[in-house]
Length: 145
Image 1 (spheres, rainbow, N blue to C red):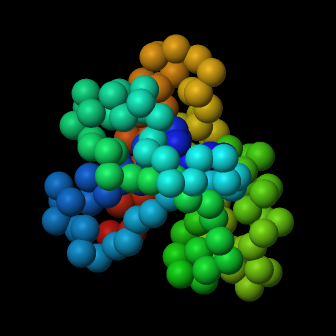
Image 2: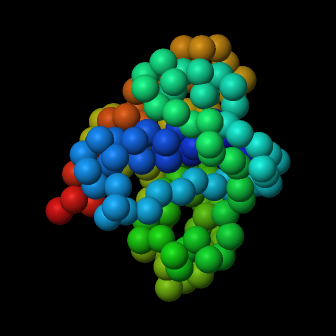
Image 3: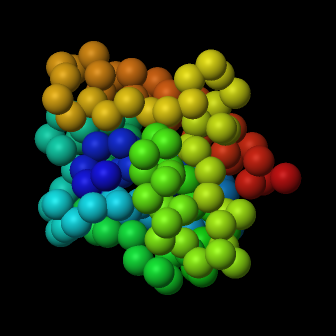
């Protein structure tokens, strides 16, 4: 939504895993929110702390809002939950709607939405990282094909 918790976590984790595999030159990763609440702000401090403990540095990321060019520029536009997917579907030009998916489709697990940890405790941020790491691995496998 605001691009300070889930989506920058997904961007940072996926980018770092791609770097570790020597794939970073082949792909471009970015994150954005469906709302403009936090434009220009770094990820939430709790998000950065939890990610750093797992070796992911999110400190250089800054929140931005999705724009029309994103639907043209990227091959995949991935949402963290169904509410944000609906907002993306409403904003996306018809010709690019096939690019829209839920991020956790790449995780292969039972959960299909990344829960928003913002109003919870530290365990929520850890759970987000667990889900995101699994989905990022699956996404990179798919992209590397």
